[in-house]
Image 1 (cartoon, rainbow, N blue to C red):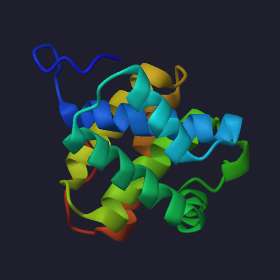
Image 2 (cartoon, rainbow, N blue to C red):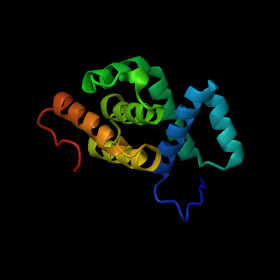
Image 3 (cartoon, one colour):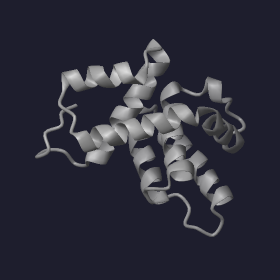
Length: 150
């Protein structure tokens, strides 16, 4: 993943992609995210604003992981959190953290970004599953606000 600003579509999307990769790697390797971020920083020059957003996302998910798992379980009761594909769980954690706890981006944007991550990194049914869970959260937690994108 290159950070050539001339070809970069969205620094925040790249940050979410890297945050997702870091969360996934943390689960597989059990390294700290500080070590993983440092490794990524050595491999490629990540702009400071992107790096700050990555750290904010990963810090938020790690700090609120239990609450995030509870939200996922509430809105996807047929799918035990520990049995979800790690990539789907990490995408949901990132999106839910942005929607419920961070409140710095529009909810619809966070949902769109999560679906794009699911299309790129998840399985065939991941985008539909992610959209369904996030749509349920929107309907339940934000009654009267616009629901997930079509």
